[in-house]
Every structure is written in structure tokens, then in C-alpha cells.
Length: 396
Image (cartoon, rainbow, N blue to C red):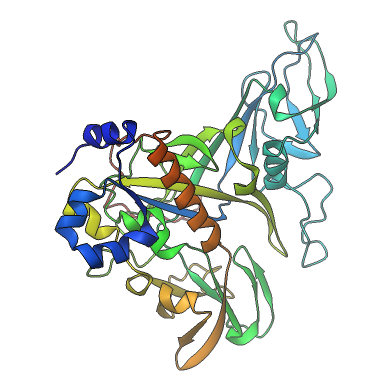
């Protein structure tokens, strides 16, 4: 048994033994669980891919004269101004003003909130345009100016839902191509798309949320952040395999960190043809090896993780709950799956290569003593389900 305090002391002294979730599997096979649990202090996990429920809070400071922003746009992308005078929230999926969207289907969605966030982190100069109704204390009614992230007082990434524990494999059972947040899906199951780092993914290495919870310290695109709440649509009570691996989306995390400390490589705007815009972001989470059981769960392999295959032409949009079948991540990463006797080519929206790079970058920071661990102050729920929105008539 180890404690966070003991592990942090080893980190601070430069003696911590740290391995990625990719490396620990072979190490445990060689040394055995007991010996490995005694020797290894931390296992790093990671993921990189589109996470639509992301965004940021920005504070511009006050102009002369002052303005209470009631409508505002950054690079013509609408931001939410229902906060204090010069605070705004920018969502990753917000479209640029004038984007034709799907008026001429499928739309291209060349630029939106995720791209603004990418440009901010990259240090580019951006335009702010804001309007106001004017008040005695905030008399200015219009402002247009240019800024970089370094001009802002705060640029705080505030993501309500990141790091889905598991996720769907999307196919298309219709006779025409469809365009979804899972990418373009060709008719009659000609292709399939998925989005997860599998055995590297944080919550698949901690399936029962023993070390990842509210308050856990995370690596968010290079910045040191933390889990500030359970993510929206968190459903820890989803059906699981006998080994405890969720067979559906299950857990999610709400994450925050300082954008001024982020690395541009791991913050990328995404255009999804026919669907919209998003933000691809990199997340790394260290798992302290407190005991043998925690270590055992970090040895999960792609072959042990199954994902549900769902038809995105009917069952997903109509919310039927139907699952065609399950396939392992070992099959998915091979580039081909077999469903109902038919082989289907598979593509990934997430990058295992970047996830592995993140896991190694985080491991290096811990080995240098630059990243210590923080345990959760509250656990994530293990028994909740995500409720649907019920369409009702107004009660009399």
C-alpha cells in the first residue's frame, strides 16, 4: 500500500518510477503484479481527439471608457456575454457569423469556436467586436479592437464534458452517405468510425474511479489543470463487462486549466463536414499505484475493451438505444472489424500517436519532479445513468 504523500515525496526527490499505460502491460507480465506494484509509483494515461463540450472563459479587462458587453464576437464567432461586463464564454462548437451551415448540405464549417481557441493558444492576433446598450457606469456602446492571449487577464479553459470513458463505433445502415460528429459514414456499412485511445484512455485505466475524481490533477494540453466536476452526461452505472469495463460511454470529466500555459500542438480546431466545428484536445492523467488492484486495472488491453456498434442513420438520431453488436479495440485498431459476418473498414477520429506522446510527456514531467499528484476531494458517481430529455405537453 502507498499513499499520495509517499508517492509525491518520491516525485519531489526525483526517485519516482513512472510508466505509461502502454509500457506497464509488458512490465507487469515480466515482474508480476505484486513486485510491479511495489516498484512502480505512477502510470500515465492519455487521450487526444475531438471533444465538443469544450470552451473557455476570457476576461478582457476594462477599456476607456468602460463597456458592458451585451453582444460580442471574436473573429466573427459569437461568444456568450451573460456574465460580468468584460467576461465572455466561447464554446468550441459555435459557428462563425454568416456560415451557411447546412443550407447547402453538406456544409464545410471552415471556422468556428474550436478554431478561435486554437488560434488563441497559438498566440495569433484576433479581433474583438462588442456592442452594448450603455449604462451610467458602462457608457461605451461599441468597441472593435485586436488582441492576443497575452493581452487577456485570464484565459481559462472550462470544459463541461471531456474524456468519455468509452464510446460508440458509428456505422450507416442507410443507402446514402451521412455526415455526423463521428465523421462521414458511407452507405450500407461501407465504413465505420470510432474515437478513443483504448488502453491508453484515462477512465478505462481507472474504470471504478478509484483515483480519478473531483480535484484530480490533470495535464490539459500541456497546462496543469484539474477535474472540477463530474462531466455532463456522466453515467457511471452503465452496463459493464465481467472485468468492470463499461460497454457504453459511461464516465466523463469536467476539466479546467490556464490556456496561457498550453501547447498549440494539443489544441486544434476541427471542421466536421456536414456537421459543424469542434475542438480536438489532449488530456493526460496520472494514476498513482496505491495498491495491487489499482495497478491491475491499468493493465487493461485493447482486446479487453469492447465498444458498441451503433447505426447513425436511424438508431442514434432516433435514440432507440439499439446496439448492433460489440467489437474490441484490438479489432478497431487493426483497421477492420467484422459485424454480422461482414468485414468493414475502420477509421479513428482520435490519435493514438498523440495520446502516447502526451502520456510520455506527462511521465517525463513527473520524473523531473515538475508534476506532483493531487487525489480527488470527491468521488465520481458509480451508479448514475444519463437521463433523456422527455418531450411533454405543458401541465394544466
